[in-house]
Length: 52
Image (cartoon, rainbow, N blue to C red):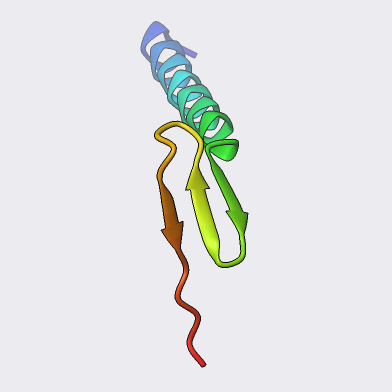
């Protein structure tokens, strides 16, 4: 493999790692307990409207 292909591989791995870290951070942000969704970061509470 050439130097250019190593750079592309490192870039792809870095982007994948950043995306997975973003998903890990977002995992604990919201708490869902019917009928509310709580955003832990801002403290806002939203209600979920279920169709009847």
